[in-house]
Amino acid sequence: MARESEIRYLSPVDIEKRSQSKYCRFKKMGIKYVDYKDPDFLMRFLNEQGKILPRRITGNSLKFQRRVAVAIKRARQLALLPYVADNLK
Amino acid sequence: MNKYETVFILNPVLSESQVKETVEKFSSFIKGLKSKITHEENWGLKKLKYPIQNKRTGFYHMFEHESDPQTTKELEVEFKRDERVLRWLSVKLDKHAIEYAEKRKKKQTKS
Image 1 (tube, chains in turn orange, brown):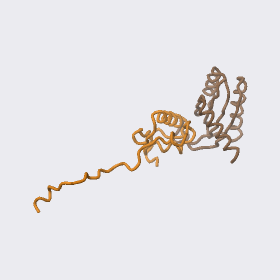
Image 2: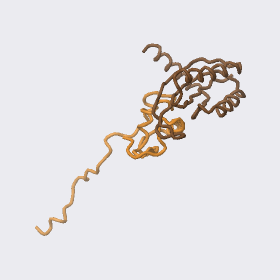
Image 3: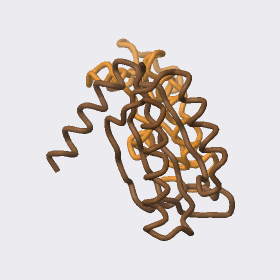
Image 4: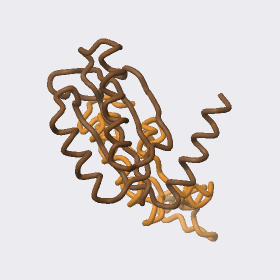
C-alpha cells in the first residue's frame, strides 16, 4: 500500500562487483620485454584515437606500463603506429 | 661493445636493385666501423601509418649489430646525409631485449 516505498532489506543489497580483478598481463604471462616492432600487440594498449590507455584500464603494473609507453612511442616514430587516428579498431 | 638494433625506412620510389644497393652501403658502413652485424631482416615494402615526406609506403630494413657507443653517432650522421632514408631508429638492447631477439631469430629460422 502506501508503505511500499519504505521497503527495508534484511540482507544487504548486491552491489555490482567486478567479476575479475585486474592483473598485469606481462607479469602473469612472464613477458619481460615489450617489443616496439610488433604493432598488432601494442594495439591492445591504444584507444580508437591512437592514444595510450591508462593503467586504470589496462591493469598493467607501473613497470610494464612504462615499457609499453616507450614501445608505443618508438613504434610511432617508425610509422608502425599512428600518432593520431580516427578509427583505429 | 654493446648490442644495438637499427631499423630504417627507405624511399619507396627506389627500384629493387637500388634498395639492395643502399642496404649494402649501410651494412658495409657498419662493418667499416669495426662493428659486427649479427642479424639482418628485410621487412619489404610496408604501408606507413602516416605520411612521411608525402610518401605513404616505405621499405623497412633492420640491422642488429655489436658496436662501440661512439660509432652510433657516425651511423646517425650517415643516415642524415642519405636522402634515400626517410627515417631510422637505433635502440640499445638490454638483457631482456637480447633474450627476446634470440627467441625471435629462432622462430624465424623455424618458419
